[in-house]
Image (cartoon, rainbow, N blue to C red):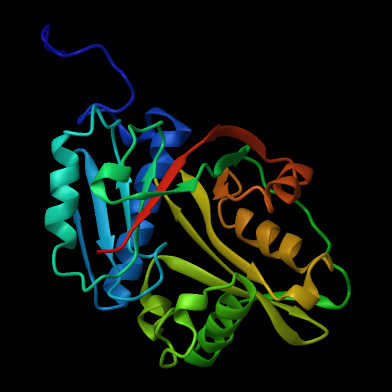
Length: 266
């Protein structure tokens, strides 16, 4: 090791991705965003400090950038990198996710969305028996993705995606990506959808939505446990709004930290 290398902070350019569960998640989520952007005909780019994605659509969580180190000030060159990447994005709403507290970005046109909690469950699988009328299946066809898309738009909800052509939110190309989509069924009807991405030493539960009439019926829980077993020797992670946090805690997930989430549209 070079004598002039800075003391390890956990977010140096050459810090191993495996250094912490938090760093594993950042790179997993960056790859998740890149896979969605690629499947959607969009763009993505990455530097040592920043991962950027533009899925070429109106869903702000798919047009997401992730800080790989803390912002140092409102003059941080990372903000110029963001502006350059999204220049010409036709006013699409985008988000910026930071593991760390940030300076006030409102003068740069950003609006604070909130501080979602980062949840972690230890590295062990689970034996879960769903209610008799609840089943979970992996999405394998475009029709499955159409069901997942309908549930996402109505159940999340994704108001900005209403009225879009079919497969605009979850394009068929996702079936060939590293992201696994699932459908949760109640009495045979698709009422919930979820996505996970296993990479960089974590199982990332990166999306979930349930139709209002099917909530608290065991479907969402089944959609969590099923992907957890995709990597039973790995920690399972998710970042979540406070509405879903109690459900994760009941299932043994531990809140670790709150992220900072910003949004912007030009």
